[in-house]
Length: 189
Length: 189
Figure (tube, chains in turn red, green):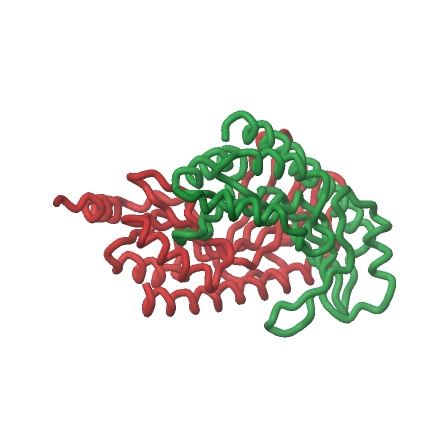
């Protein structure tokens, strides 16, 4: 029988990376390699976790611009620099955890990845379940979503310094859990 | 053939509510009724969305206490009152969206609920996929996770007032989407 999944997988992995700038990074490479080395799986999108300054434009469409995006811990001044000019819209500091989308060859392989992932990350689930496309989404737990400025206010330096401290702590915790996840993937998937 | 799922469903729904205090509320009742009125589904846990003050105890175990929990919009003074005494641990303000766990009778029913839910809530997925237990988790999008105090600092009043404003806005947005979700469940599930 022709192995459609393996054909799709090699086609997909042969394509150039189309991910949005700012979200391909070293931190998640080993996890991607480990998953793609297993027969019934391939990753379709990923982010190791990042720290972002988001400008949210008004209106219901939830449009937003990135002012800043980092795949490393951040410094207070990096944030401060973005608050110097006149502020017209809401600015949010977000620390986002690992996110991975993994295509699976069948229900059995999806269930296996799901069960392994949920040992470390509570936010793992099958988000697509059509016959031709089964996708597991894995999302880390640590996150921060804090408003830091809008046209009428800017958080003071003391607040921002503390927020940066906790943002960096969560970033490290996400990294620690991702390393644990890598070990489990390698040995159990 | 004996209908195990319907038996489980009536047993479960006949039991008393075991949910943790502070998370059974009017806002989600109609959604629960709508889902439970459909043959292949029953809800096992739910929260309409809430605003919480969380005291996070130190150490790696991620233990935490709730200082305050609301299923309505909040007032600045409600938060302020909790910051008057000596602060020993981290205090976080969290605005959490709707969360629902739904048991499904089979893969087909799970897929249907998943596809409907994902039209409104991006964080919907199958989190359990054993033969006897298929569960869809649905989580709203709006959230805030902001540090507001620890033993060394307290966010100033101006920051807190603005944070409360955005917390309430997100709370309303979660409510609006939940109403939209209810309509879709009623007509399409």
